[in-house]
Amino acid sequence: MIEYAATAEVKQGMARAHEARAQVLRDALSWIFARRRASASGYRVSRWASARAS
Image (cartoon, rainbow, N blue to C red; front, side, top):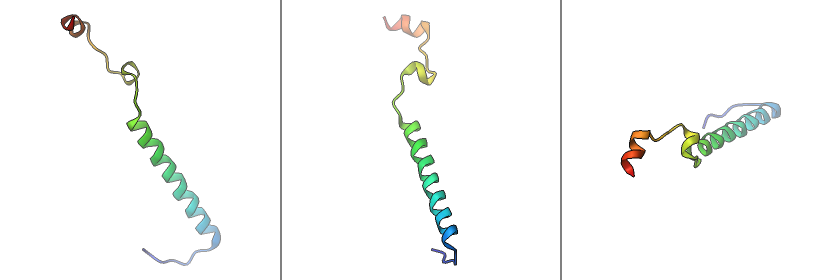
């Protein structure tokens, strides 16, 4: 790890930025791995495929 001399304000700012990045990562992963309904994700079954299946 790189050592640096920082004021308390800088350290607090870096901690807030780290938390913000972590929240964005959590939100992105939950969005990617969320279970969605087929119609919500944009995938549709064609009429031809559904007619062939029955």
